[in-house]
Image (cartoon, rainbow, N blue to C red):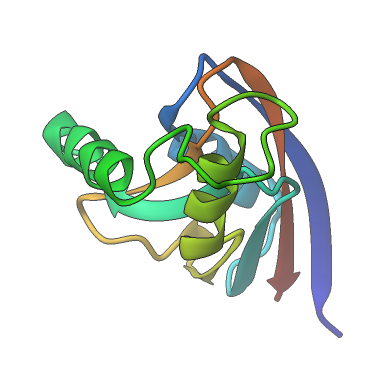
Length: 140
């Protein structure tokens, strides 16, 4: 019979950008007493997303932001959805092009991340937000 556990993490974002929370995920897995399994992360928002990316060089996060700023700039003429400001629709487009869930194998009681991989919440809005990420771990 397998075991499972869940938690919800709150991540405070200062505005648009990538916010690493790898250590919080590692702690959750370590405290779970599950050695082998599958960890699912789910972001409960439509204008933020999840990403596994290099965490050694901050220029990677900067360049990702620059790319998406060019791909989906704020305040485009003709966009009708502007309920929360000029960054509203561009944030939804960025969220649609990225992902709201991740699956990570757990091996020997640890997420099976590579050496330079970190787990990030990618906030697509320009103002501060408190985001929720649900973690679900299933295994033995």
